[in-house]
Image (cartoon, rainbow, N blue to C red; front, top):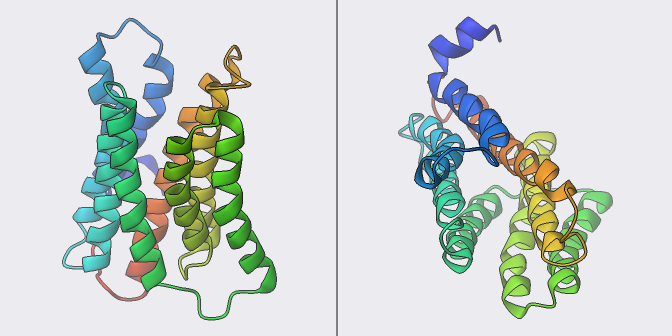
Length: 218
């Protein structure tokens, strides 16, 4: 879609992209703490606003809540790792409910296999990276979210891929707590994987709901 059309028809998405992409460049800059926290949360918060604008679809509101809890987690994480993780965990539970409500009728064997691998592998890898029971418990929700997204009837190469990117971002965070503690790689990967994962999830769900006739708004 041309830039002007995106700005006129989907201003929430354009604003989200502007904040989401630009945060990667300012995250290690001179911006004062609270401004940086607000900037960090704005990208996904604007995705929540975009999804909520597509009322009166209840499922659009569900994904809006997922995005809102993600934005809350983004900001609170800068103040308290545990509180931020709880916000994300709550978002994973809401997302799992949405994806289970929209289960794919007849997933292939390979799709089932990847879903099971995500469900089991993500918590296991998280534990091996950190040896933290709390991280492993959080990762159960993360793995459930990724697996249920992949096995849902939403587009796999938007929603499913976005969920896997989100999970990969968190795994890099956990690696930064262990083997990648002295590496610059996490800074390069964590935010792009996370933000564009959330972006794909949101636009994928909204696009699918619109295609199903749940609403006609842009």
